[in-house]
Image 1 (cartoon, one colour):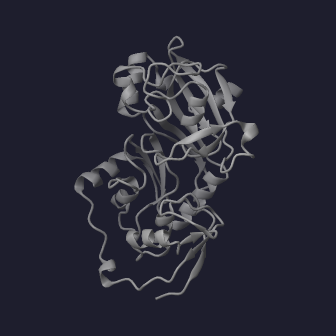
Image 2 (cartoon, helix red, strand yellow):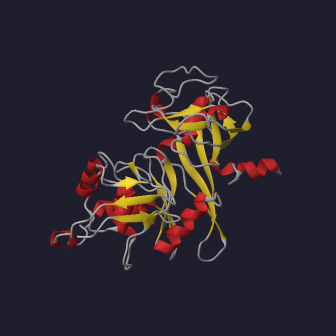
Length: 343
């Protein structure tokens, strides 16, 4: 049995769930043991009590109590993935090399496990492992209902490099969305801060920029938006850039503007009307059944070659049908409409 340890969260490791981070540091530690240590207050982050799903940040200190020696049963090999999961993961790959894998994650598939999430990208990443010793590692996350580009790293060093690139905003992410109404002006920046709203559904609420510093737990958040096309004021196709990377940032920012993302039951409401300038997030029919938010473009410096890598993910089926119905042509839009506008 080991003694009490104080383990620092290294640069590039921030943003992970505490339980996931611990299992990578202590592979023989079980989920049940982690949750038990949290309930007892034995496991602490920067001296404070925590939960298994607490997100750790770079530089934090994690107090780990004495750990029992793992039984031989913990040394069992990873269970084999179902063939359907292997086929699914391989079908999602839009780019891969010896260092980086890019997936086009479908809406409805969770990135990491959690309450009620038995099937998720992290748990199926071994399908892309090949002959390597370890499965690919997640570099960042997308909401379960958001589709689009998701990066994985084939080794620890690449993962740390990419995580740092995301943290320092060296990467550029462009999302496409359909929002209710048409934002005015047609291009702008949203700077509302975000804070946890409380409750069990991980909702966030917007905080006026002038009130962020005085609001406990609030973090500053910035998003750029540009209207690419619209449907006579009823709905609009917008490009979104999350300058910062907060939980549910784009969804909250658009809702706060009065233009919630179509299909967003959490922040857009289920009615046809919205109290802001736009219409409600439910436009009726098939369009409103799924969230219309897609991580479309991602550009970054390749961690091994140093060259700029530009990635694009095709629209998911439900959004492609919406584009066809509304007569919008994805191929007519430049990869980065914000740079095009600046010219």
